[in-house]
Image (cartoon, rainbow, N blue to C red; front, side, top):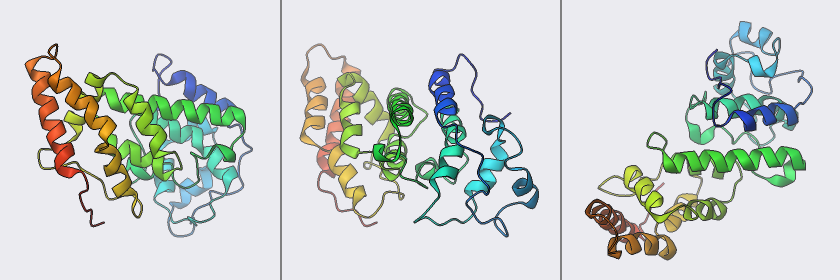
Length: 243
């Protein structure tokens, strides 16, 4: 089955915990437009299997259906959420873009969950962001945007990032940022794109990169990367964004 993780996957324990603590009753409906937005066969069979076995193709069809963005039912979201988390862990999200996968309900607000539920969500968020930071196949901006849109604190996520070794942060930013600027995707809401840019160019983050550039123990490659990244930080600080 597509977008399932194996027992030796790093996220296996937290995903199994998600299926355990989000053990909500099977909903009576999908919470989205079924009459014209979803395939009739998928609607008829959507809840016939356990949530662990919900086909990725069903989830994909569900994500592309219209819904009430102001009042999505918590019981439906919580029931489907563990399967959504598993697709993210498998790097096979079923939505239009990873940025919008978790935003149908304020998933990142701890007041919406009991202690066990929030414990799983908090752990997943930290693991997912950490994986993004140390890998070269996940966009940092997309990941931050996904969690921000779902209700997580931008400040907290940048504190998580700054807890990594400076060299790891440098490698992450160097891989993510293009020569012409710091990419900010179009899914950031309202003025939040300016907020994330301010965090990317914050004095504390700049200081970490400059420290690597001037550290006599840094390799020439590290110094070169630090010079490029710090240059982008200074060039983009205070940049006016139009969207």
